Every structure is written in C-alpha cells, then in structure tokens.
Length: 179
Ligand SMILES: [Fe+2]
Ligand SMILES: [Fe+2]
Image (tube, rainbow, N blue to C red):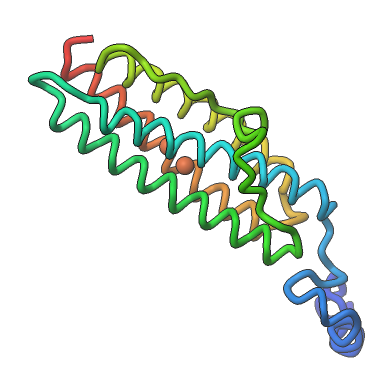
C-alpha cells in the first residue's frame, strides 16, 4: 500500500502553488464556489451590521429603573457584532471579494430585521428574535461550506457560538425581568 494515497504528491502541490499566485489564499485546491461564498458572506456581513445598529439603538434608548444592566448587555452585544462584521469582511477580502458596506439594500441583504421596540422588554425580545434568525441562517452557511471552505466554516462556527451565547443572555435578561 502506498503512503498516504489520498494526499496530493509534493511535486504537484509545489507546481500548483506557483500558478496564479495573484489569487493569494485562494489556491487550486479551493473546492467551494468562490462567488457564492462571497455572496453568502456578504449577507452575513449585512446581518451583523443590522445587529450592530439595532443593539446600538437599544443601548441608547434603554430607560427605566432596570435599564442599566440591560443597556450594558446591549452595548456589549453591539461591540461583539461589530467584531463579527470585521472578521467576515476580512475573510471576504481574503477570498478575493469585496465587502458590501453599501447602506442601500443593507436591510434586504440582512437575514435579521431592524425593529426598534417600544419598551425594554420589546427590545430584548426583538434582539432575541434576531439572534435566533442569525443562529439558523449561520448554521445553514456552515453546512454549505462544509469541507469545501473550512476557514469560512470555522469562522462562522465561532460566530454562531457567540450568537447562541447572545440568545442565552437575552433569555436570562427576560427571566430577570419576570418575563
Ligand atoms: Fe454577530
Ligand atoms: Fe449576536
């Protein structure tokens, strides 16, 4: 039996790496459809930006006796969504794409909605709904990337884990507020 027959031999690997070096991180062995991946990542980017804006709005609008700790949570989530947006934008560029930061159409590209909410409870509930949308759509992205683009998959897996934490935080807040 030959050694590691499922791996490409070194000579071929070395030859392939020399071709199309302008593609940077995207090599011949990249199995995913790059245009589709960039489009999907841009939708995730729009989702994150809409989430930043919604959490920021909620942070500034949170009022009332119980608002202080809730507002702090909103701000923390806003900052984490911004980190996600930046990570996704960087990955898009690595794949030779361009991050779509055009405000026009942002809400259409986003999976999650932008709902202002009239009360503290409403705000928390809307944020929870948005997190649950992100959780489901990111899980689908992860399945789609599979082994064809493990780097994008791992990025979205780490983001998904944090969205699940966010949803859990929001449920706890609702509980503390007697909802
Ligand atoms: Fe996020
Ligand atoms: Fe989140």
